[in-house]
Length: 288
Picture 1 (cartoon, helix red, strand yellow):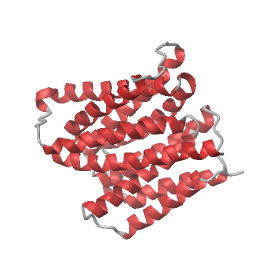
Picture 2 (cartoon, rainbow, N blue to C red):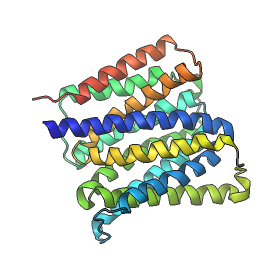
Picture 3 (cartoon, rainbow, N blue to C red):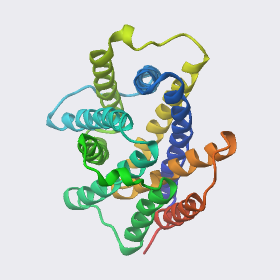
Picture 4 (tube, rainbow, N blue to C red):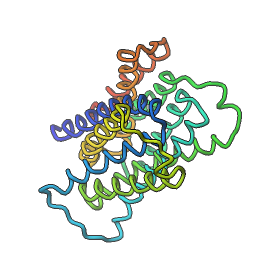
């Protein structure tokens, strides 16, 4: 029981740190653009993860058929980030954010069906509340009703993010935490770097050495630490439970926006925070 509590705490701390990172991401995207921000974030994310994994740790580089899982996790999270940027070029954040969180349902369903994870009624309610919370925190606009190519981006985003967590869990179970951390981070960064350079080239990124790059850099730093902790927690907490608990990240981002950026705290956001808090309580509670 104590071990379960410590792993849940790792997931919650990871979600909180991810929320802080997303707050800096929001500022960075506005300041230097989404693709430049993604490039800078990845440039800070990868070295931190690699140094942590390689420094004074018993890391086994042996490859077998199960080695594909961490790489697939990195591939899909990389695709998810790219599709998120493409979606944001068409839609507002208020539409993309709740839609991408539907990936929770993909992760839960696949984890139960293919990984054999058990989910009781309390956790089902917790997952439902977590998903509902996103739509209150980021109310949808009418543009979702008008079909465009952006809908394909959103669909791909949902599937990619949902699959990435399932493959991350599989990689941890089959190859261990450090192997999975290493190759998921490498693959994710390779996908993002190659895509950004292909689309814009290094010159086209227009990255200037000013204080604005600190925001995506901080996003990368917080994201790396969060990822390291999340992988450790995911080792013993099922993906069907850990993924919905990421709602704490959104609560953190929204709260920081209200406090530090003077964003409006609408009734819908307050309801969303309440639902998300209830979801966290249910998902964190051990049931007999």
